[in-house]
Length: 435
Image (cartoon, rainbow, N blue to C red; front, side, top):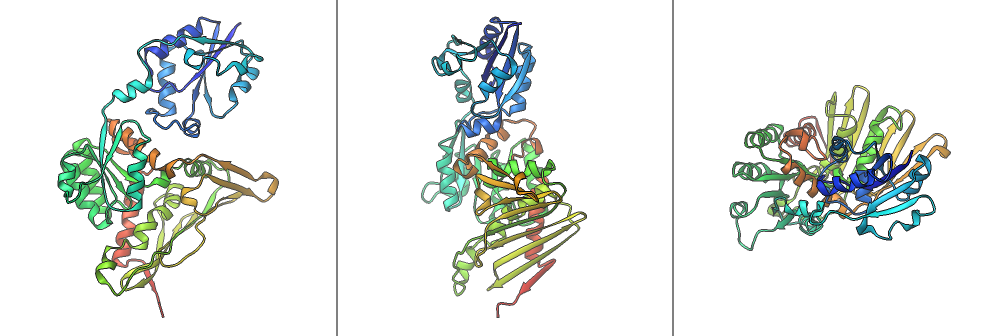
């Protein structure tokens, strides 16, 4: 039996793909098709893939052409696959002419002419282009505008000088809102009521009820409402969460995250203090994210400890107790500490060095150091461009709801808003003396 293998992303499967696969199949008796994984695409800088790995695999399987479908997950895998599977022919499109000649010592290499006039890139470009209005003035919004340039199908639009929020809404298809948290509910609701999709930075609002109301309005109008949090889209962070949930370090007993930065505040100027995000609003959602994603949002008890100066929290630490675990999240803009993440389990622990919220590297450590593992993942644009891409997918996804929630579920969005409201109301809160 003559075996043929080919590889591709197969995003937005079209007749050009199908024709190429049929011609590859005709070269032998058995066709193996390698589909690039999401992580491998990101590692190669290919972030504009619109469909997930499983969506691409299912579309390919539905054609009935492939005898076997495998995932391509790392550089150099082609040689391993050819050797391990007894492949006779490697087939690929002619636009790669000469690129894979290095495989000739292992099998025959055939370059197939592609179908003219169609490509996934053209199909992606042909889809609706989304203009995203950017609300808020900060280094984050500046990065967001720059990162939009790396994503096909999206253009960022900042307000013109003197332009009101309402005027901006009238000129765009969607909004990325990074204004002060107290303005989130009003602005997001206005945008949704005027038919605009919304990417809303965490915390979504300052109360669980307001966040739930925004989701209700979005659902009624068939619009995407997604949480903004670049850390949730960083490849390394997403992988460590999956490894922790998958039992790599046994049962997770503790999740401890620290996020701090020294940002001086003029406490004598009440107006200046009023404009500041609280430490908890600024850093809290990121610090609490791993606890909620790994241990869940159904904690048994909570304690919030804050150092308050002029009504402003220079330091806030949230401690959560679960039936079988615990977590701590430190958020501070007036106190400095090591910005690391430690996930502790019954078999080992995962350690992420500072700044963990934009890491490309983490370690799994065990009792026997020889069992330790290191994980490296490319991080482009601090995760922002992946967040933009997820937002575009949410807009295109008619299912909406948690199916298009991106990196942060609705339950976590609600839990974060609940913590914010408890902090504002001083529920479960202890104030430290400033002497």
